[in-house]
Amino acid sequence: MKYSFNKKIIAITGAANGIGRAAAITLAGEGATIIAIDKEKSSLDKLKFKLKKKCISKNINCTDLDSIKSNLKDIKIIDGLVNCAGIVSQGNIMNCSKEEWQHTLNTNLTSVFYITQFFMNNFLKRKKGSIVNVSSVASSIKGVKKRFAYSASKAGIIGLTKSIAVDYAKQGVRCNVICPGTVDTPTWRKRVLSANNPSQAKKDFNSRQIIGRVAKPEEISDLILFLLSDRSSFVTGSVYNIDGGMSL
Image 1: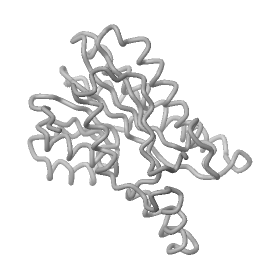
Image 2: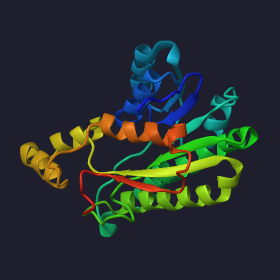
Image 3: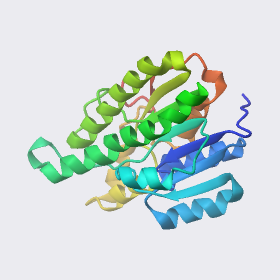
């Protein structure tokens, strides 16, 4: 299946690492220019070096609305948006502090609200646009141990996505959400290495998917590519589990 992203401009939050980085590389390979948004400047610089002219890097914290407005005001045209920025907080309701709860919701959910609202006027003005939000199987899809605040924030993304899809379908804007299982990202590797028994931790993570392994970021970015493309023109408000069978 071939895609045409030539002259298309796609904004990606959390673009410097993991799924966001894979999506940026995949889309740039199909001809898109990437607005790469991330708060980690060193990783963002590495992506810029790799993609060269296909990347416009924006060193922004997506929870800072003033920073979003001031640093993205020069972006006049956009065709697609991928909301991928996020953190994986751990623990249950009894050991979740007020600060951790707020930080998780701000990073994973409020940032999606801020960025999407900022770009929505552009989509509406052009009467077209595709938004892909990255949630998780650990959400309203499936209960996962010690992911209390994280799951709540990711469930919120699903609700946000469906609301946007309903509100703006007739104005040419599509909005879908993907729910990955465990993915081989830098943050996942850190969690594995910080475990008391890293070897066993890796086995445990692999076994959560009935396929028997975690996903590669590129396997997730392939779905993002489809949902941003015209080939998914009849798809909006949909929730895609891409989890190796974790939710079964």
